[in-house]
Length: 97
Image (cartoon, rainbow, N blue to C red):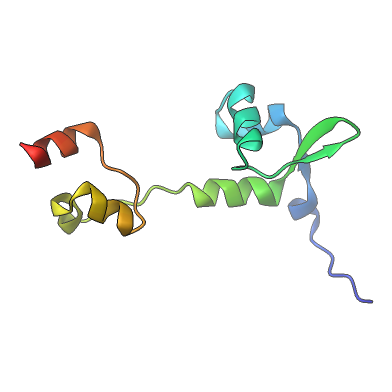
């Protein structure tokens, strides 16, 4: 059986504190992301560790895309159906009134 080896950077294990420092989040926010299933982590000997590749994937999955001019005219339901994040309160209020 052939095993595919990952390079050392992809296998690097990070503590919750290290993830918090790298992302600028609080450790509690990182724990909530892990508990909510947003961020993959492993529990090794009772301690949570996050692979660098999983941190990168989590960051990539939360990328905010710039909106084009045509996005401003979409209704909130159309915007969500298109797979894009919700609009801010100001845009919703202006669209309704």
